Length: 212
Image (tube, rainbow, N blue to C red; front, top):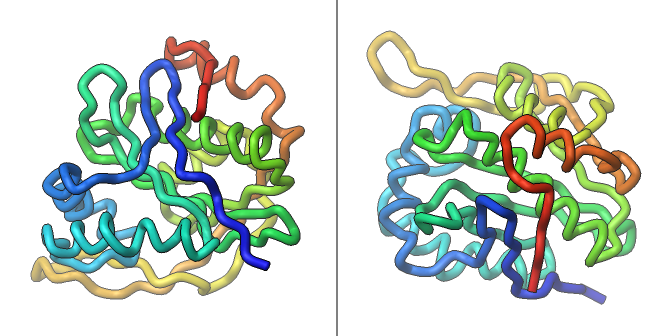
C-alpha cells in the first residue's frame, strides 16, 4: 500500500517551505540555470520556463501523489522571494526512510538557508511523520552540500565509488559529463539533539518550526 505525505507548509523564523505555484516559474528557471546547479544536478540545460512550468504543475506534485516524496519551494519569510528547493525522494514507507536533496539560489548562498530548510524538513519528517531515517547523497567534490549535511548532524556512512555523473565546464565553454564518487550521509531522530540550537547560535535565527 502506497502512502503519501500531506500537502503542507513549514515555517521557520526566516523561511517558509511551501508547495510551488505557477508564480514561481521565472525565479525557478533563473535559479536552475546557475552554474553550480547545472554542475551538480541532472536538470536540463538550458533550463527554460517551460521546464519550470512542467516541474511545478506536473512533476513536483506527482512526487507527492505518487508516494515517492514531497517537493517544497523554500522562500524568504519577509520578502517571499524564492530561496531554493527541498525535495524528499525515494521514500520507503515500510522502512520509514527518505532521501533529501536541496538546491539554493546563488544570491541566497552563505546565509545558512540550506541548513535551516534541511533541518526544518528533517524535524517535520521525524516528529510529525514518525520517520526513522533521512539519507543524503553528495558528490565527492560538492563541498557546499557536504557542509550542509554536517551542519544538520548527518553522519557519513561511506563512499559509493564512481556512482554519479556531474557536469564540468570545458575550455570552449561547453559542458562535459564527469564521473564522480558519492558520499552517503544519514540522519536519525536522535542525531538532531542540539542541532537546532547550534544553527540558531551560528546564524542568529530562532530554533523554531511550525507546520500545518
